[in-house]
Image 1 (tube, one colour):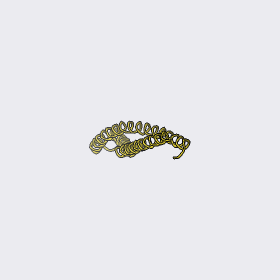
Image 2 (cartoon, rainbow, N blue to C red; image 1 turned 30 degrees about the vertical axis):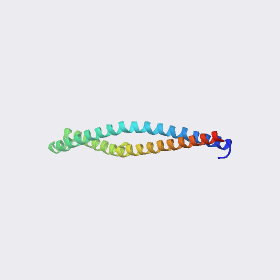
Image 3 (tube, rainbow, N blue to C red; image 1 turned 180 degrees about the vertical axis):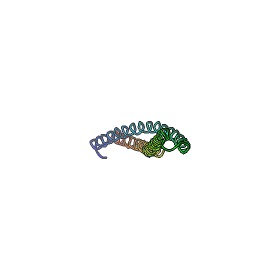
Image 4 (cartoon, rainbow, N blue to C red; image 1 turned 90 degrees about the vertical axis):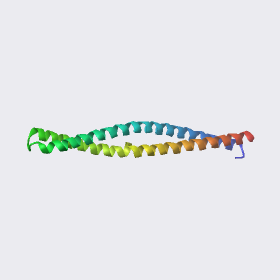
Length: 130
């Protein structure tokens, strides 16, 4: 950069990028925190559902065909199995792998913030030297 105007333009670009990167980092951090809570809740509910499904699979064969008790337990089994499938799908979006991906995204944005700040410092020094 050879003029103060060049430096001012470069600083304005850097400031805009820093503002955007900091906003993205805040959003990623918020999402990561929510994903951690959600992943823990999903894991706990999946464990509970697995136990319920196992219990129902044990109980249902011992009940007489056509009885109200058997029908109610079969309905409960279908609901638990459906809920388990929904949670398994949800885990793809908010599970441990999704959480690790968000951690990676946040680390990359933080590295960009560091590099952009270093760039801004260099431009400021060059401007002062002019």
